[in-house]
Image 1 (cartoon, rainbow, N blue to C red):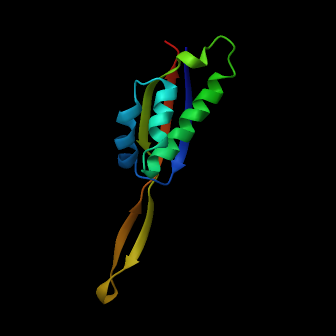
Image 2: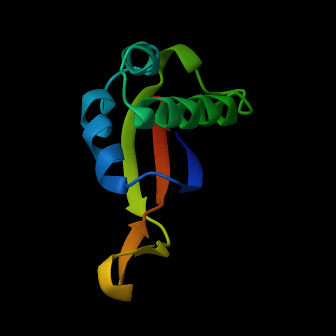
Length: 110
């Protein structure tokens, strides 16, 4: 059985989240959380929080064994981009793109 959790509108680029995802995909939940705990990147704590949310969602079902849960997939999609301007020389402005991400974690007990 598959269980999922979604974190939306996180103020981090999806490209930075995808760097973390490859390290924990396919691992058991406990091993994945242990790896994320010691990663220095900002995305590691966000992904860790989403995995813990998925485990809490799985805890609501009586027929799922939490010890055998595996991180089946983690998807980092792009959310809406906040567009800002920075003042430059001669009265000009350049665009600054503040990207957001939607993170989806899918756990499976198989």
